[in-house]
Length: 102
Image (cartoon, rainbow, N blue to C red; front, top):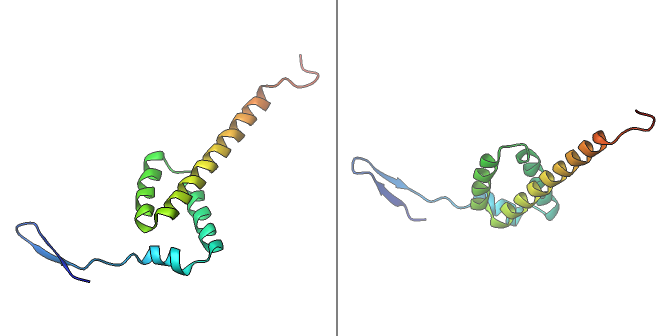
């Protein structure tokens, strides 16, 4: 790979672009099952993060692999929807009167 020259006026830096090693690992080395576990693991951790952090992390994952990013986003959305449905069901159950109460 050819080096890229970055110059700020005072300092000139030669940067060698690196290959997308993480993307190659995801696409070429991991099995479908391994990719699924990775996506589920990442989504499980991201679902508890603030939305701005989730969005920022998805930008980073898109740089690795667009399909992986889409899968993580879908898994996070599904987990958040399931959590919201469970919370709504719990709230509805708590609001229901019990038998024998006055």
